[in-house]
Image (tube, rainbow, N blue to C red; front, side, top):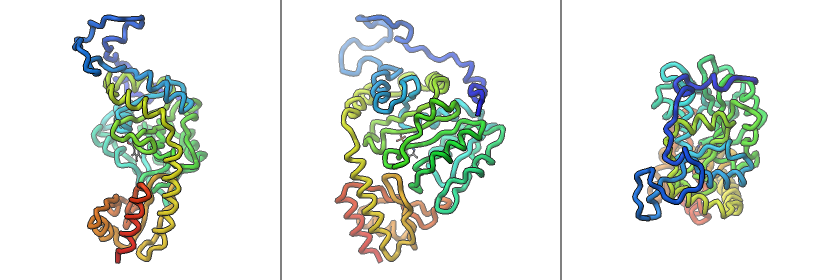
Length: 343
Ligand SMILES: *Cc1c(COP(=O)(O)O)cnc(C)c1O
């Protein structure tokens, strides 16, 4: 769809003049820093961090095959999710469309920003209702949230279905790929280079094992990246995170990802055989969603064995369901042993 992306941005954001950081204005070589009122005594952290995070973006650019100008880094995925609302949605007027059940942060960020969320229920076995999602959009819809692989259902969607939605709506379509590393369907991030109304969201919190460092990644065309960068806090990624992420990005994660996938298949097959289990939903992620006869009772049983899983019983579309993360082999064995003792 040929559309004017700047027309989707809030008027006040489009005309914003961003805060210019102390070192933004001069690009040459410098040796004496007396511009930012920092302490001159080195603690390792006495200087402000790079507000553009160029070193981290360059490394991610190599790993992901996306130019640095198409990469936005946030304090977890939470920050870009919040920024999407602040950049594109006029509070009290615009709306966002999201699939249900899906990741809870979309609705929380929408509520905080006073933006209506139109939930479109997933179909049978959590299938993607493409036409219903397109039909749920109106002239005030600015954002469409699609999560693939979806949390909590675990299934990844057909890339052609996701792209059909991108091509059919006059809104920004966000594809949350937090779990894409675990899916054979892969990532759609390269598609952002051809589709102006698309944002792909990834995170270092899951497959990369860096949840505590808080680094979320948004890929989009330069116009969107520039607007988001203008609205974010200047120093949103702290120096320790930038340094530790750069170091962690040197070690490949493929072996760990493959092991988690292998464990997922073992745990899913074992759990499916248990008498109280009604269904194990197929997963393209690092967790499985399990439907049982009494989710609350099983949850309490696992807690007594000091095992915590996520109880999704109260989530619309997930009645009777527990979401179980795939852990280390020993941890998964403990889970299976505890489940075998349940009666
Ligand atoms: C875990 C998760 C994230 C990651 O959030 P961070 O803030 O980056 O830790 C994003 N989206 C979904 C759907 C998730 O399940």
